[in-house]
Image (cartoon, rainbow over all chains, first blue to last red):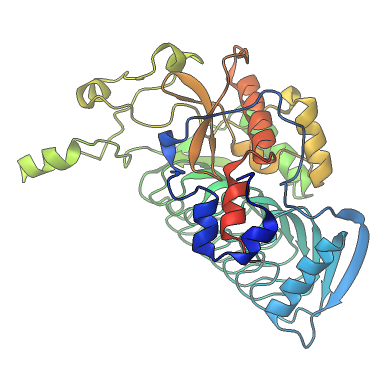
Length: 289
Length: 137
């Protein structure tokens, strides 16, 4: 890798680059890695390729008349120039705004947006003053997202990390397939929220619709209001002191702490009855059948 | 009936998977020769009294009031060795023997978070090469 310059890489095709960097024989999965941490690693706080931005350097972008791609490219360009706070004005329900931002940034969207807003992000702090369409924060890796009004369905689908917060109510299938992170809903959530949830935490201050946590594999759901019904293998668990401390801190952090505290929250976890790790089971089933 | 009941074993000791790398506790695990479930509590929420100075600084740099995505990072165990799962490379990264493990999972989790963070931000992380290979020039 050290022998190949960036200039030389630039001249190559992607296939040539992959070969030149010795990646064709490398396996990036499971136990084949055998990598070890370096205890003397340098203390850095951002990815090596992340642009150096200053939160105090602020600018505005008027989205009026621009396409989504133009707006998103503009944001990236501003980050390269060191702007750490970017305000998007007049979004007028545009889809896919702010997707794929992979480093720190304060992004403020003044207005409402369409679907897939701030999907695939890894690091930024986002505040949206209006409403958002479906799949907001889909596949989010880290950062914070605050929606001031309501959100559509599949809010935080497949989220892997970070805090995704909606002050209002959200649609159905909130946090479907979530693999980590925290989703906080100030109002109610629709049916099948937490469907196939694998990890992470979901906090619903209001009511939850039918089949909450259906087929959830792991993770935790806290509900402050009523639960219409729990899905398959979603069961109630004891709310511990650590849970209460975490809920209190998190809800206070976003100014969403209920007046009556957090003691009334119901904690839902996986019953683990659907867990299936058995490599012998297919053979056993064949014998039975 | 297969697949309709939990037949794994509970985690009772912080060193359980260091002392017993196979981690076969329940009858079913012994029967199939395979550990069932995670080797750490994925739902354990962090104790913020135990934050390390490096993690505090990271939160400040990112403008976060808490550990954010690192709340999901825990010290796990692979082949009897402490290790941390790195989602960016879909693999386990081992903790060197020179690091002395604390006697509780909360402190171990803080070490795991710090080591993973330093690794992900370093030039030796596989994503650096991956990015060079696949990025658009």
